[in-house]
Length: 246
Image (tube, rainbow, N blue to C red; front, top):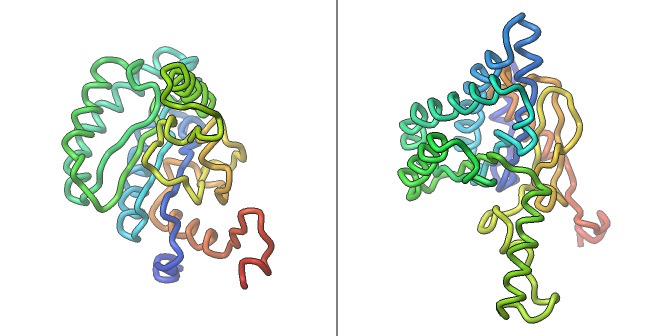
């Protein structure tokens, strides 16, 4: 069996990795089970990916857990997802503490069910001093919602006189990811190749990695394999290879 972890250059790690956790429903359907069965099994992939990222030295990991569009799914599935979220947050607090991982969340969080919101805030508060890695959950989130929300905040800043002209406007300070570096690397599972309204501003220069592995089957070695692929890329930010090598 290939040891992907030992091949990783620790000096070339992305500081921030974003993940679109896709394929839970299709994975469940393949096994003849309801969609929520896939979501429950996806929790193990969350744990393994989080531990793998922390162990290798990634400082920021952001997971797309629930989009604003997901409310349109069948009510039973949405309710089951929210129940699963509450249960998982409570169970994983010990793991987060053991691994010195800080929990963070982005999105329109106040629209979450009250029990979900309260449990989320509790775990965020109890891990706020952890320093090894920041794990961010994107909940009730979409990139378009975030940009619209940022524009509302910016408009208020203009109206109140905090910002005088557009040249001085720092868009990033109004985003929900304020204080986080932009992700250098995006991983999406299940073979789909699109952003699905995820971190539209922040992923402008990120490298993308698409794998056929369904999220419930995604394990540490899959994460390390993705990092190796990232390390083979040349990140130019609009420049030429020759400019980078000067």
